[in-house]
Length: 143
Image (cartoon, rainbow, N blue to C red; front, top):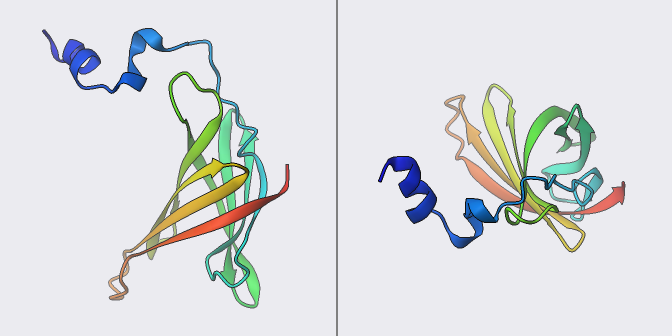
């Protein structure tokens, strides 16, 4: 048995069986696309986020809290995920921002109309600051 056969047979979980995949399925992005606002007005992290579809890619536009104004983080392409190979509804995402002095990886999920973002910040500037994680909850303000 070669590696490809072993991978297909022995190293996948029951949700990943290739013979069960419907190759005609396309992801339903509607649960994710639109404008979202942080439910915690005093979070100090990402305040607003907008997901748009641009040339078949989901783009995340984020604004951070930088009192007294918001700081536009810019755009980041998102990888999107469904909850299984046979489910079209997008429930998860992953994006990456590079700011020079730090890298920020964002993982999130949408469930029951709530967006949850987990933000992982890693400093690269030898400032001595500890890398940190935050989790924030968002409600949709516009489709």
